[in-house]
Amino acid sequence: PLFRSIGESAFCNTGLQEVVFPKSLKKIQSLAFSCCTELKTVTFKGKPKELGSSIFDRCDSLAEIFVPTGTKEYFVQALFSVDERIVIEY
Image 1 (spheres, rainbow, N blue to C red):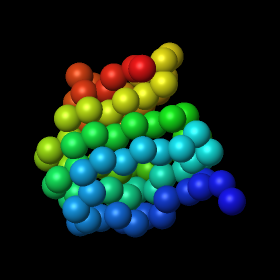
Image 2 (cartoon, rainbow, N blue to C red):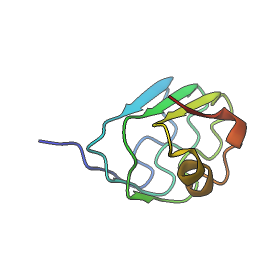
Image 3 (cartoon, helix red, strand yellow):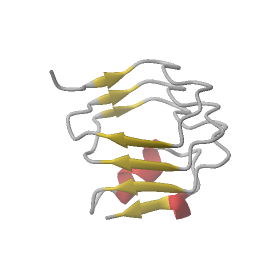
Image 4 (cartoon, rainbow, N blue to C red):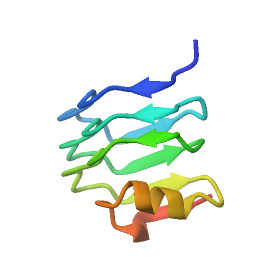
């Protein structure tokens, strides 16, 4: 089974340090990773069709969000609460 969706507040307040989203992921709901204060690195293998609001709200250690080449503008707009300097194309 392909991993397609992450629910609202699904990983809120967990000790995750790194997350890699598979290409099959289509949707991340609001606040899915909020308050993950140890989260440092996020990698998107694809471009989800739907990104909820404040997905990474209060993730104070978040230093790098890797996104596929040609998608930086999409992610900067979708993740408007995140500093665009940490969004890096690979």
